[in-house]
Length: 464
Image 1 (spheres, rainbow, N blue to C red):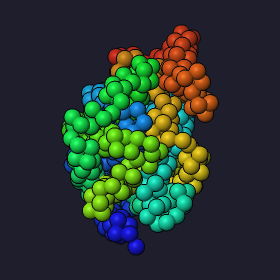
Image 2 (cartoon, rainbow, N blue to C red):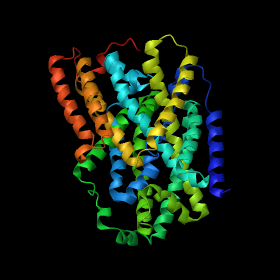
Image 3 (tube, helix red, strand yellow):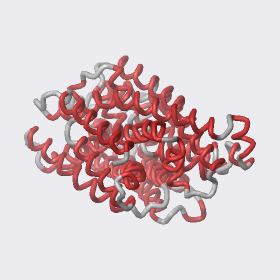
Image 4 (spheres, one colour):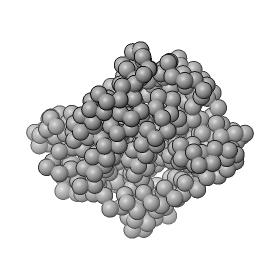
């Protein structure tokens, strides 16, 4: 058996053991979903980073850099800006309300109908994006296991599903180990790739000139990437779950700023690997660029890189699946059966996770690129972020106006994704254009009765 595969199997066993023995007691649903809101900042940072040092940031970024060059860095720069904005805008709100799912945050600001619209258009794109992890890890496991690509993807999906069923506390502790492995694995691989390419000067000289152009994608796509990645922390379901799990506001702010810096520092590592892969192997398919580079490194560096990819994938998706399960249980099932026991909620969440993995994996296997799929689906939820920010930071939006803005704006974005971006226009632009017009028109007829520059302190506090 390939020694790299033994490394990966051993890593899976170690991380699963860490996750299991640190999971805590499932005394109630709040412990299972948000660790009873008692996590310190140093456990929050790996949990927050897990949503951004994932399949897109690793395999997807190498793929994008091999295909278009250094412009792939906009994803990380936008995410860094997003965390800084998030720290000084919504952290206070989320720590103030201390709930379990992001849908419950929308229930504080609006009504149940608007809450459902919000969570549907957060749930759908996040669910599909979770499947990017199975594609990324599958691209490594399939040749190691001597399986077709699809077989490696399904093996990856099965392993990640098992880890997601344990609970947030175990996942948070497990991610502490993942964070070290990701930075170490990709750091070593980036150094090795740069050395093989002859150093920075030789690498740049061997690339097409457009590969070093930050504006190579065009202003429309570049701006949409920055806005998309920059707004993702404001409504990212793992991010919100992590803030709900924080001990207090100060703990949450330390964690979010540290996470933004961590994302920015990590960003250049997979880009260096992708650029080096193009310099050395320009004709290979971009999707397998990371694997092919790993093969050229030799067994030691290749194994370390494989562990980094494994850690990136496994750190993200269990928490994401758990948060999706929480949304399905807390924001849908409890509306039908509000007296459901904590045991029932946890059991249902686990069933939802399994069903989601099967469904989204089938869809993901039809997609041409990992990063393209992720960025497109992230744009579906931007109008939700706009409504949330306006209502929290400026003036409350009437539930009627919020509902129709989210329903119409997000539906346009989702349709645009499935139509494969007609006219070469990113989904963000028609979504914002139609959504904001809807907001202005509907707000004219339905003005919120709440007053103040920040609506949330004035809302009814029956939830507290």
